[in-house]
Amino acid sequence: MNKLDLFQGVFENKKVLITGHTGFKGSWMAIWLRELGAEVYGYSLEPYTYRDNFVSTNLATKINHRIGDVRDQNALLNYFQEVKPDFAFHLAAQPLVIESYSKPHYNFETNLMGTVNFFEAVRNCPSVKVAINVTTDKCYKNNEWLWGYRENDPMGGDDPYSASKGCSELITHSYIKSFFEKKGSANVASGRAGNVIGGGDWAENRILPDIIRSYINNEELEIRNINSVRPWQFVLEPIFGYLKLSEKLWLEGKSFSGGWNFGPKDLGNYSVGDVVDEVKKGIPTLQVSSPKTHEKLHEAGLLKLDITKAVNLLDWKPKLTFEETIQLTVQGYLDEINEQDIYTSRVKQIESYCLK
Ligand SMILES: NC(=O)c1ccc[n+]([C@@H]2O[C@H](COP(=O)([O-])OP(=O)(O)OC[C@H]3O[C@@H](n4cnc5c(N)ncnc54)[C@H](O)[C@@H]3O)[C@@H](O)[C@H]2O)c1
Image 1: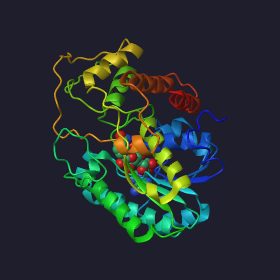
Image 2: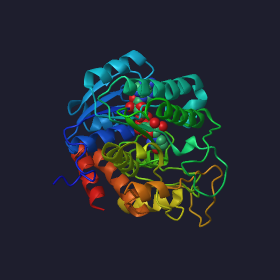
Image 3: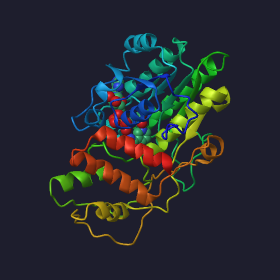
């Protein structure tokens, strides 16, 4: 019995194609699927840096992959037709709000036409039985309210990134209604999750990578927004959700089509200061200059997901406490710093996650 298999064995010996496999989430997903006995294929741009999870885990030698642009409709379609996957996951995207302001055209091209090209490839590749588009909590029209957003709330987005993900959801809906309701067509859904953390993410301007960089450089980190509250979610939580959703689509079919939220537990509103305190348990020498106060502020624009649908229908729920989330994240980075075999380290984390 494979300890990592929480999915009734549906991925064993199946071909799974992931767009965005060189990215943070895509590389973690590729590792889990490989360990489940799937034949994993990837299509995306080159990794950004030598530190990326895809590079440090040496995934290029462990899965089949092609470097290509999702804006290139023919190249993506050709790759699908060559591979003939059973499952397809679309994670390739321009994923940053800040970048979407400096490159709005590129952002919309990648996130809209990339999604269209993905579904065109699925539509023209009859081997695909299940396809999932990965979007974000930011796809919802943000009403600045305290309640969680439900799957049937309206799409929206003020900044170019959020708008592009709202559009990506509308494209998914349109493809389901127009092409994927027919018998024999692929079973299609989308997964909406918020920001995630975990080893292997080295993006700029994010708190966990910033903390780890300051530790490596032996520098004091100045944190201005120490009281900011964020939903802290470990990278494996939504990936568990996407895989659970695809298991249901594979075994039970089109009744699982449509949008699904995969948010964190309501963990009592932990702040950046709480994260720093928790990180210090693993890295006691961490130096942070901003004093922590006990006042916790509600962030304007904070978007919460209502996860009732996934919890009730998918046999999925977030597994980790806040403390476990930070501990696993810090351990993932420390293994990199200590030059462990990173692939094995990631597999161990997936194993301990599955045992929760
Ligand atoms: N990381 C998060 O906290 C988070 C939160 C919500 C949603 N998401 C979504 O999850 C998905 C994966 O995000 P991530 O954090 O792994 O991002 P990432 O930046 O680490 O990875 C993005 C991947 O997409 C690929 N890509 C980007 N533009 C491409 C193009 N034009 N053609 C082909 N490939 C391209 C990159 O090569 C990379 O493999 C994205 O759709 C993102 O919007 C991520």
